[in-house]
Image (cartoon, rainbow, N blue to C red; front, side, top):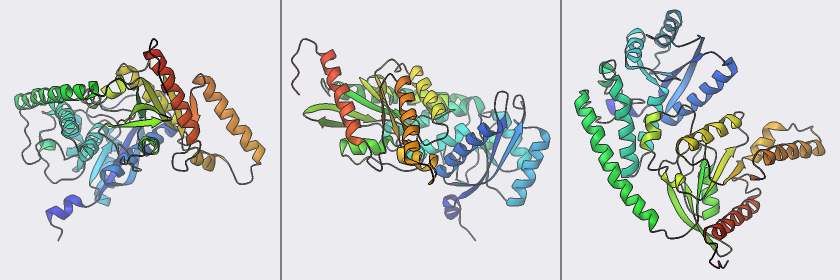
Length: 395
């Protein structure tokens, strides 16, 4: 017999559910579910089945249609699945109705991401930010999620605030939100003071979709030991290091990765962490060029930068994982001159789009790292000249 502690730590089996809505293709939704499966794996779950349904809009009561819900229920019961994860945000009443029909724990994409953030949070600031986002997520769902919030079995979706005693009273939740905002305001003041004390250094910040290799690049450029892992949201807390290229000092920061359908509450509560991005002089936008949806990822990052008011900064786009791109794009029989032509077309296209502000590298293979360093060095030196036009800057 498995005891409660073992059961909590055991890998859960997950069933994923997505809707093919207007202006979406089956292929797009499958790619979204690929990412949802990666999120589930990051949280510790093994995906055993996916369900999709074509609907113009979600059903107001159960998200999917009655027939599809019955199909999911039959599969969940037959395979004894632990959790059903929906790729879109569910209301409290939808969660309640679905759980009643399926008789299994049900969470949505936002809940899953919050769970991952709760696991990854290490500092007091990150923990407070995640807790604030969790309470803001719970507040409008209190009535529908009463039973949902009473689950105490552990596992994905149950690591919410107040694990030993779930508080469902709106007033208590609002008080918690108010208290957390005050605590974060105090931490923000301390962080602002720390940033001011960094002096007159040019500040460079790494941004990008999650799992594109930002932390690996941070380690390469700063020779530091930043946690890097092939999982989503490996880095939550901003890491800043002083870097010197050819006697030119600057500050380099690594920040949390962005993702499509990022819960609004997370963006709000992590705005203080993203101050590092807002206050940076130069942004290094890292892109996983080998990912089939890299252009959509670029759009997601640009939109998030616009939301936090950081899109008007000088941006250097770093196309990472070129080794993997070539591996996935080129067949063995392809002639070398054809490969070179394809790569040249790729680079010309993105250089035109970025106005020449693009570098193509492989962080793991250390491909074109010197070119990247020189590019950053030139940008930093140019910024010093703009920042201090009447001061002689020695390099």
